[in-house]
Length: 176
Image (cartoon, rainbow, N blue to C red; front, side):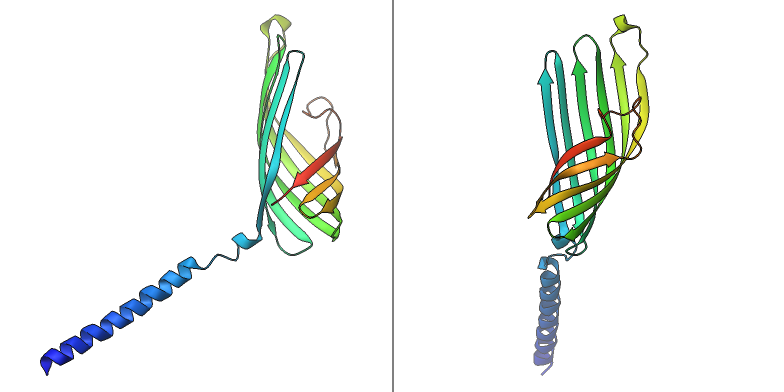
């Protein structure tokens, strides 16, 4: 009788442990709702010409709150070199908000903060630069599926310190 009781207790404990491990395993296999709303994208840029090279890598991710609103973060790394003139390294990040007025029209606001480090050729007699440059872009674009093409304007544009040629810039945005 004692033998049967011990087996019953062991069997009951085994069933309870098995059920608890099974429920934990099922909880771990279920995908998180958070990651189902995250979309990844970014940009890659390459430019070269007569003694000039520029390369940019700018990954980003957004969280899609609903069909209209999304918000996310981005990183930016750029290297430029003009032969016998200067080289620069630009590293920073951004926060972006996207709003789809209708599925085809997307408005955006993006704050970007970049650290600019420029080194000039010593023969030019210029001092090297290292400074932070903020930009606040307001934009509008035409959207189809996961691609948006449009134009944006930097409301904080400063002709002296900006790394951009002017305040108006076209953009091509893709999120998967």
